[in-house]
Length: 212
Image (cartoon, rainbow, N blue to C red):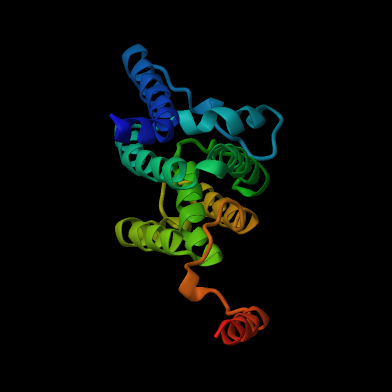
């Protein structure tokens, strides 16, 4: 029960997002709708709504299935391991990725899916290990690099039907936020890594001599 109370605050938001994503896809499938027009259409006023709606829209079942597990795993890691900044980082990745896509991605096509958010979460967790340098962050960075390192190929163009711009710009947003929040809630280094205070050490030495 204690473990559940500790973990649950890191799970409710990812689960809520997944519920909305899957409910949307089910509704599209049952009613025969295509809501892709609600995605990000770069550099158009109407396309701005996609900044908020695109992560909940997917082109097909294989699209949402491929995004769901990494989204849940990475967002859960964010909320459990980086509690103090998790909500801020999640919201900023969500908004910045959408805005970057709207500003910089290919025009004339709608960009949809949660993959930009997935790459943003990956970027934050991976680069937090580099910028923070503490044992926990480094360990998490290595773990996700091992399991999801293949995602790096998704930031390159040439894959038909894939918004590689969302992947790349999401990763950039996550990396930038990892740098911006690198010192927030960072654990203190172990005592053996602290630099000795020479003055204090010399004073302690003199005090020990006087006591003798």
